[in-house]
Length: 135
Image (tube, rainbow, N blue to C red; front, top):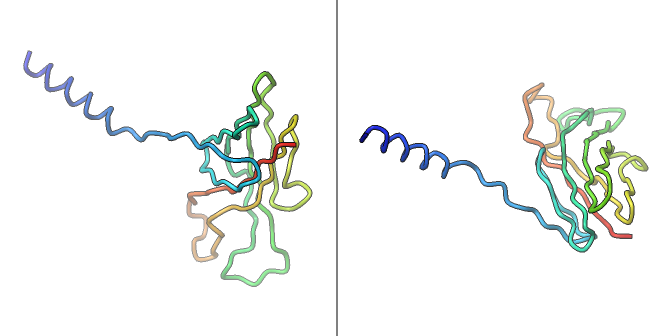
């Protein structure tokens, strides 16, 4: 009986240590940053934007001289109240850096960290920067 109480307490304590995903609420026209899997609710737009993943990162490393700057592409899901979910791929290179869904325009404006040749193919903890505008 005592062992059961101890195990229950450990499960309860372990559950309390789980990371809590806080809601990101953003203002239209102001840039915001999301990690992969994170969702932002756009205030007064009845819409949410989820940064799903980095699809491609061919940007020139900062410690190399390149002829071409390269590009990065991310997958996002735009969820509007009463509308279908829209899966989109956005590029850092205009005009493919923005998409309009209903009365909302989402623009992909940055991706960190910037690649370094010295890092090779090491996994990166990406953060994508977006701006949402209500039209």
